[in-house]
Image (tube, rainbow, N blue to C red; front, top):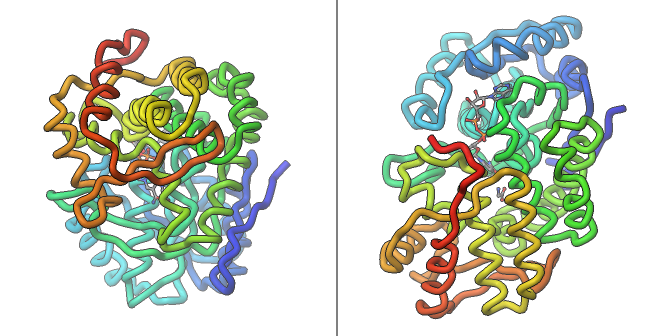
Length: 370
Ligand code: NAD
Ligand code: GLY
């Protein structure tokens, strides 16, 4: 049964539909958005599995449907690909009455959303996320971006979709590692906002890893609810929305240090959450037992827990490029308890050193290494 949640942003409010087979709603939702045609932006990997049912739904609503294919991979989330997409939109004579549809993971969603935000100064778009990470995080909230060689997600706009269609069927074709990366973001929501949900995750993690449909749907709905509530209160990340970056200060440093090649984004965030939890137990009031619960849950999700070996100078240098840095000061999202997050600055260097060193002595034995 499909569930509908809402992101409440006044006249820019929109629904998130979650359920098995909700892809079939795309045509009707496009009509409701006032679209005269649809242009799907996707890649060949996703198109092979999920373009046909999306097209069928759009056709059944009597709308024309063009498709723009972009190459698969984070390396193509770039201004060059954006330029190619805009060129295709112009060749297809896309107008503001055309609805762009992002069919894919976070790379496609961020790229298509950015194209929609800037094409003719703003064109409507729909998110159809097909990875678990995109279903619980990147498709909701209107952050769009492409990467610059000097920094990830450095060029973008806030541009909200007209609707988000989370079809849990799409997860059937998702590789296990990509599923795990999405589970990391789900654990993040429990850790920062909802202790009961965290308890539920501890009971249900094996079912999630085994792709149990009802467990996955519950986790997606609760994650989207938490994100939608935070975005409704702080769309532009002037305050509370920063809490969604729990694990990201360490995680982004790990991604940069390993050249984005060793770990998926969600995997780097998993290690980052372990480090942020350890730091929380040293300076923010999280009990050592609760830091241990977070680490144990991440490990049970078959996610990595140990960071790459780096000097403290390298850690500090990498973390000072984070987007949360203000006036050169590194800001950490930490936990006072499970479900209670806060922003903390002024963490002494020797404390940071203890956190990364202690974690350094662990290994990621149960994990795929690339
Ligand atoms: P991704 O988009 O690269 O997808 C991962 C891989 O899975 C790709 O090869 C993709 O083609 C493939 N794939 C997608 N759906 C599939 C399916 N159903 N079956 C089989 N294969 C499928 O990666 P991602 O993890 O979804 O997204 C990561 C991106 O999201 C990063 O660029 C990150 O910066 C961004 N992000 C954005 C936000 C935001 O708020 N906008 C939040 C978090 C992450
Ligand atoms: N993924 C963090 C945010 O959307 O704010």
